[in-house]
Length: 345
Image (tube, rainbow, N blue to C red):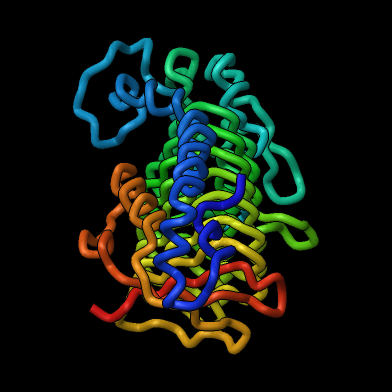
């Protein structure tokens, strides 16, 4: 489906004709948005339904008491190491069928050798009943948590290492801490919500690849580094704090919303898609390959912001009815992308 953020980018760019064009395409926009809801929201129906009764297990803020048999599988870091531990062998759909001893015996990559998971982690509980996995401790040097996740819930109570949720196709990952580089790299679906900061290349393509994330959502409450959404094809990325340089570089499509200060060269090489810059106090300089179009209130952006609020992502209330300056580009490429910069308050 054509990305909603880029939908209006195909219309006229002259400010005087913009309102009439929006009126003419309102019906088509409604169909586009309905398709978006059907395509994206229904993918998350299992998550939304199960969350109502699984929060007692997978939500760290829950105070409900649950029966011992529904206790989630908890993997607790007991030995810190400066050498990264790669845990892509710990797949939720696999460990849900295993005993704690089997999980401990699973081999993980430690430097240039493989060792049992139990050498670094304690394991308790089971994911058989609730399809939930919890990592506890400072896992900043634990790579590939939740990689290729297809369904279920993963929570990290602490920091998470590189490649969190890489190539995942469904499910939900929540980090109650910070994450490092490559969060959601080349992901295809599901949701990642980091309640702290993230490193570089959020939702990006791997070096030598063609596309970054092609679906799903990545929400970062804090700051994020450079090249957010590099070559992303579809999906939504939202960053509540500061963003680094080259946000949305080489975007094919998709939506990136940045609520804090943004570094230089946003949207460089983008073909389609939408980058929303909601910090009106410090807007970055636009590249000369972008053309100013108009000042308006984008309807679709309000829908995105309401959706973020429903996901417990902090959105300033005055952003919902704010006006934005629309810039089209990058004209070194197709020129069908857009950067929306919030007008001064």
